Every structure is written in structure tokens, then in C-alpha cells.
Amino acid sequence: MDNQGDSLQRQREIAFCSLHPDDNQARSAADFLIAIDGVQRVDVIDAANLVVCYQLLVICLADIEGLLQQRGFHLDNRLMYKIRRALFHYTEETQRANLGCAQGDANCTQKVFANRYRKREHGCQDDRPEHWRRYL
Image 1: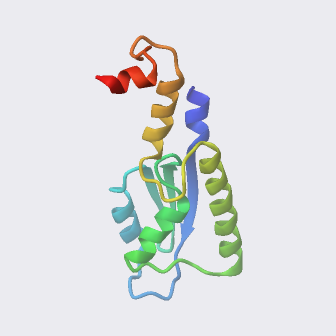
Image 2: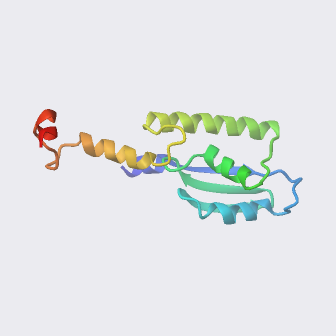
């Protein structure tokens, strides 16, 4: 179980455009991101780059970048960064879909555990047929 938890933790670098009124976008973004649910750690590399560690079942890179852009941060849009981000977005979206998380679904983790609980054998299930349960 620990191996799967480790495989769902992501560490990504986010680069910001240097042409912005805020000289230290990375520090400002780190202060904002550390309070976001699912973000575990944010490390500032320099004034324009940071590394964010997050749980994939709770939040994905596309959501993090969308939140940053809504707050007025400018991401670096050079070709290499665009290609890297597109690859990360695709792989994370695919992995979340394979785990049962719909795109934009905020409570994905709860649904995964609820589905597992329903399918597992335990003593908390009602053995009566469906029409008997609705009768009373």
C-alpha cells in the first residue's frame, strides 16, 4: 500500500516568466500554494522557479497552474516548458481517470475509498434484497 501512495505523489518544477512586476514570483507563489489542499511541500529554487510536491488524487498540475494563473502569476511559456507541461497534464489526467477520478472532481479520494469499502466483504452490509429495503 505504501508503494501506491508513493506513486501518487508528484514533484514538479514550475517556471515563471521573468517579465512580471513581481520580481520574486516563485516566493509569492510558494506562499500561496502551501495553503492549498493536497500540496505537501513547496521549495523555491530561485526568483523564477519553484518545485511543488503534491498528492495526485487530491490535486493535479493543471489545477495548480490554473490557480496560479487566476491569481495573476505568469508562467513561462517557452516551447520546452509548454511541451513538458502538456506531457505532465496528459499523463496525470490519464492516471487519475484510470483510478476513477473524473476531471474537475474535487472529492476523488473519497470516492475511491468509498468504492473500495462497498466492494469489500464486511459485516456492515444489508443482506436483504433491494425491494425489501425500500419496503420499510
